[in-house]
Length: 118
Image 1 (tube, rainbow, N blue to C red):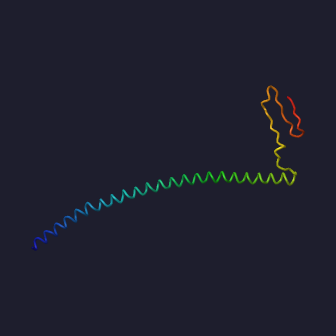
Image 2: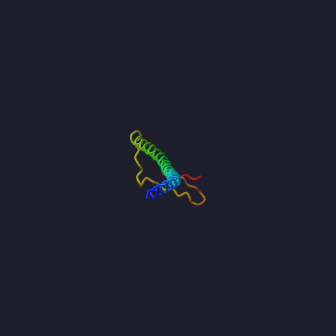
């Protein structure tokens, strides 16, 4: 019986050696594959965030220009009202000019409503 136990222990020792020799490199290989997968996924995430950042920068530039133009337009309109007494044109004050009037071209004079022929 003692020889059976010693034989079983030797077999267990051999199996353990094989598991260590195969299992450790296998585990290292699986860890390496998982790590490479994580690196690839992180690269995709970085690319996505970088693209979103670029789009947000473009939108910020556009909005900054729009805000500065809006502020200037309001300032110009305020100055026109306060310093020069100007008001927005009423619809009846707007004159539509048809530039396709045959051979001759007519231009409207905005000050007195007369037309001039060239």
